[in-house]
Length: 384
Image 1 (cartoon, rainbow, N blue to C red):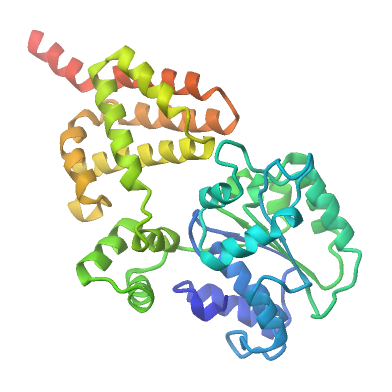
Image 2 (tube, helix red, strand yellow):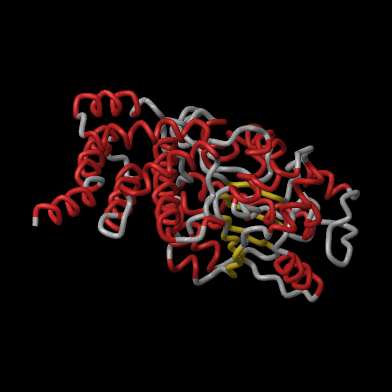
């Protein structure tokens, strides 16, 4: 991955290349961006630029031995750390899953966390970066670099570190080994320890503008103009999402009917049917359940836009738009805030390993009442 292969964020690329040129490289970086954004690709390209043996003014050469190894994620001086799961030992580390990770990144360098979880069979488990990982990393830092002038550690989804792992990493950041650069990558910056945030140079990887997205899609995919424009609209500058949609892997295709049936049953207050829906839903993996809640929040937002905002702000496909026209009247100024709070609370509980069945039953029963808020208000007005 070179800087040139990443669309947009040209200011970030320039700042990083200038820092290398003037030898003003921070020992610890944090690249922040949405899940599916260019944050991990940017970390990869930066690591490649640092180790390049014939770097150019603004990018790595792509031809030297270091670049070739970086392209295959096999450079001995670059250590990859990422969330893992149990199954290959009681205290799993990234090294146990490195071959899976290499093939995963070579297939999709702008990845979603959920796709990685499915790759390693963790759809029904929580992934994490454990204390064993930090201990192994500390041992590696004792060794001298094999080839390049820099030893580089890239930690993807750094917010997945357990507290003991984060504290061990903190010690490395406080007293960094010579010629060692840490690159932390996250989609949830607020979950990192404040003490870690204070020791890294934070860089925001922003969404891609329409022109850069259009150029990238036009170069890499054969799409009709109307379809490309639709994908640009729905992806909202998220490159990973746009790529998945181009490959006909848009998750909303499967999430939309599931969400729509849930809302219909909840509004109708058909409790026995709702219970059966939940029994079927809880068979999904925990990460898929979290994604479903996020999709629900997205649909609530779109209903509010439909009710109160300009149509060009909507990010819906034709099926979703058809549903939104019917569902939007039940999302209004009287209940929208409460509905959003309930979704966010359910997401937090699922993240903390609460019983999915209890969480969704509680959420569904609350929605039964909230979705009828407008109807009850109107009925009261009529009665008066």
